[in-house]
Image (cartoon, rainbow, N blue to C red; front, side, top):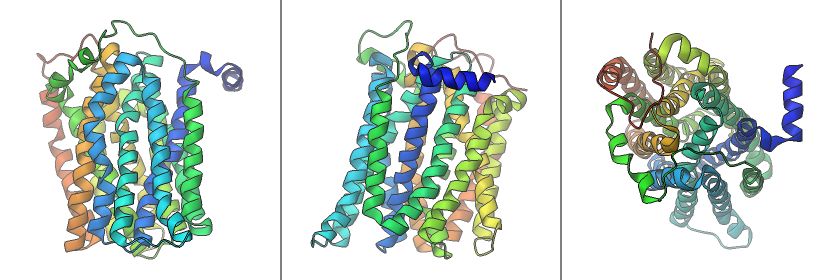
Length: 426
């Protein structure tokens, strides 16, 4: 009854419940972003591009993700998160429209060459990267400030809404592309982004104490945060999580297409990863409180590596790789939720977006390196070998992660930006 009344109140007065409105906003972004991240590699595969070429396309967004990450955090801290979130939906809409061009031109009688299509896909990915570079830092800052002191809980649920939308997006968009064609699929995604722009305008502004009075002043803590010992564990978790995400957006999709899955089936299997993310993200606050960030990070890295190896080893078998994909969502979800929660708890509210942007910069570097490195490894050896190598890397880093956690939580080490609560460790 309480849940029903709460939902009814949200529908009648959404702006009075900024946390719930932010959840809905995250749902729209998860839907549109997942559609784009699945459509681009599927389209590249349909064009017959090599794995190394696919790796370049998948890695392209990281260029903006690295360059724009800190300015996005600074703008959020100075002018508010809403303008940044609006920008994220707008640039993602442009990305979808650019990706449509090769098929639209082909329909009008202009057949582009392979290298021209690759460049258009790279341009599309650059706009997508501009969107992804700033969205999560702004959205996570907004949601954490809407429920101060409950960062792990609300950020976990925010990821659950985004990933839940990702399930819908991954399942539907693959079949839409297979049945109606890629132009319609990209156009459908653009329409979702347009709805997201509209929803973003409904987000109420949140008061911010000790707000910086100039844009440049909001950059001040960035240098300290980049190499802060207290954020070292969050940096490491972000890097490993993004390394896996980079493979999920390219190599894993190519793997399932290579072993005989159709475009629609590949999208459906990809959605199973999001189911696992939703499961762990919604209850992440409880998990973090029970076993602490050190064990959450360690177990997440170990399990992600083991599951990646398992998928590669069982790809030709029925059921097993599909089940492992769902399990990989649970392992990835723990890492994906942990690093922003650590950044939020290690930072003061008026510098929250910058702290999240700095930690996410490590994510951006991994998103650049992972598809490129493992794409060339797969071209030189095989997709399975590349997946085995990543699995071993994740396991090794996981085993070493308690040392990084200990360095970042030494007694003399304080929060990087002020009196924020430290995550508990048991």
